[in-house]
Amino acid sequence: MRIITRGAKVGPCNICGTVGVLTEDHIPPKGVARVSQVLMLNIVDLLSVQRPKKSGRISQNGVKYRTLCGKCNNERLGLRYDPVLIALAKDVRAYLESALHLPSAMHLTVKQNRLVRSVVGHLLAHGVDEHRNGSMIENLTDYFLDESAPFPANLKLYYWVYPYNDQVIVKGAALSVHYWNSFAVFMLLKFFPLSFFIVLDEPAEWRIPFGRLDSVLTTSIDDEAMIDINFANLPPQRWPEAPENTGMVMYGEGAIGAIQTAF
Ligand SMILES: [Zn+2]
Image (cartoon, rainbow, N blue to C red; front, side, top):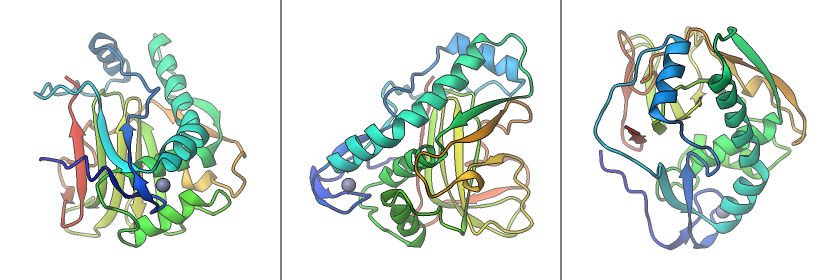
């Protein structure tokens, strides 16, 4: 898949729509370091998950999109929201590095409203010319730009530990967990050590066994919540973007995906 990551140098910001000079958004955010292959394989063993498949392309820089104005990129994401995501990634990483035997879960206190806006902002940055492109993006844009706004009621946000070095970003694909039944549109952001998965109008019959962040969000930006980081029963590396067994993903018109293999 060839991905257009650089649109015009000047244009509308993917988030706020302001027309001006565009800047590069980085996935993972600057400040989230990769782990060495040796350490990562130790972590994979520790977590009893499958070893990553070795594949070709080496990416030193992650995924970059030149789609954001300076204010959204440097002030909103860089100063206000990314520090919370970066700190969470560092905490989980430090835990994985130091543990010889993991308990099944750890608990961390986070500023959840800032954390989720960081995740949402990077998803909105993904893809060229995506400003307010469709109702899901529209709702997430309104949420991102208004710190007192509630998270869109028709969305769920799941998270789980992702012990792999590559990055996955998907925006606007549709997943079914069982063949052709009950598809739902999703967005996905994965980089070591966490995955974030937003589902639109999740079908009632889905049973996704991971923790949710949308359920702990509030309308006061600096509120804090305790979240669980679970180390047991993690999904396969390529779930849900390439589900095994009975699931299916449709990358239809308008879906944008990027997978960068790290080694
Ligand atoms: Zn902007």
